Amino acid sequence: MKTTVRLLLFCCFWACGARAAAADDFAAVTAADRARIAATIAGDTLKLAELLSDDLRYAHADGRVQTKAQFISAVASNKVQYLSFTPEDVALQAIAPGVVAMQGGARLAARAEGQRHEFTLRFLAVWRQENDRWRLVAYQSAQLAAAPARRP
Image 1 (cartoon, rainbow, N blue to C red):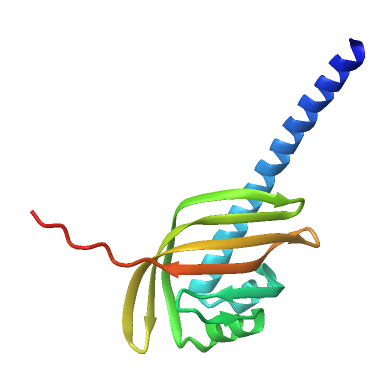
Image 2 (image 1 turned 135 degrees about the vertical axis):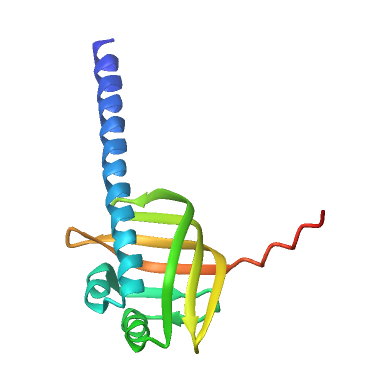
């Protein structure tokens, strides 16, 4: 009986500790994602280099897939200037120790070839802890169709 009680207490403490660790990881990943968005909008390629994994695969809503070097080069070129990225309905899930998936929606505004573009998308981002720093290792987004106009 004492062994069973001890085992139950151990499991409860372990589960509470795991939840606390996940909450800490989620807060760190959320902060890293905000920093990534801000760096992308600002064109801060040095900050992006810190936040992106060398293994990055970044799949845009139009189907293009870029490596870390390609993504940073594209941001530096200013051919497409990101104006805003507003996340919505974001959820995080611990996938494995040191790996967190983030999924949600976002409203995005960008300027390309002199024209402003605005759209809504869904995304899935995978963050991995590398050398005590959270880095984006994979990103996939899909543009949502515009909502039909409502008729009175």
